[in-house]
Length: 375
Image 1: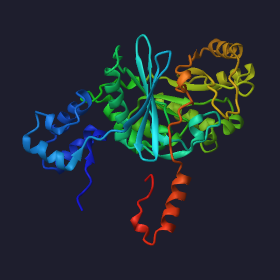
Image 2 (image 1 turned 90 degrees about the horizontal axis):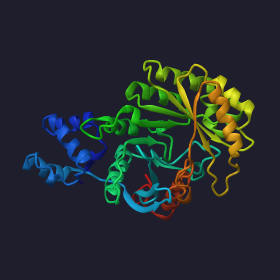
Image 3 (image 1 turned 30 degrees about the horizontal axis):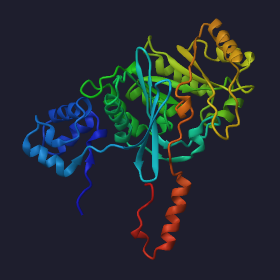
Image 4 (image 1 turned 90 degrees about the vertical axis):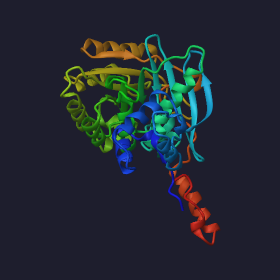
């Protein structure tokens, strides 16, 4: 049986160098491939004319550049675009592009679904399918650039945020090479401050990110005390607020210009009182930070309501008076369910995958004849 082809799309410069050395080639081939794939958008090895004919032929037999499949696109009245991407027969993910006057932000996914079960998030209600590979993560950026180039205004991607489906820091092995590619001058060449990883508070992952690739960090806080955060963001039971904020302080300790972005979804009668605003201000005192207040985006079956504009304004004024840079995020793409917390995709939760696999095994006298579904 022949070996499966390796997908070069998700390999960082270091990964490609190791790969070409294993093939008996020189390290500089990695830089050539990076530029062809990520700067020029070329998938066909035969078109990579500064590679030898022999190497191009060899790569065609042992390697590939494989991308998720675009299966749907929606355009909001405010210019926001959302795409549905199929990553395997059972799982699809969503990515969103948000155009603004001075920048274009691409929101990408790191998992099919999410296992963290945050109470106010539509993605959580879908369950968890699987982690995405580094190729499936960086492939979203590759596809978005190609798709946007086909539009009349051809906007440019200036910022990338891992704020789509999933918890990035629970898939660190895959996001690490993808982040490397985003900031590599021979690939995407983005400044670290223009790449943001959003986490619900995976403290070990924050420490890993600081050591490997300290890009901008956003933390989904949503409550000023552990009792409430335990309910809204269940991972808080493993990594409570004190431990989380210590990790945040450490993350920006060596960079005077860096700030942590704290995300705070505004839930009517739950976390939006003046008392809670003052508690949040005390909690974040001394941490280089800014606060994004996010009006809750309702979805079918949601148990929460959006805070009134008066309460959101009052909350922001209290934080600002305490010296915290605070903005109210303007909801984008609401008419196509592309706003924060609304990404759902189409995923097969792990429990259903296991049930299907068990059923397939029971129906077959030879279980080996059935490949794991969704693996």
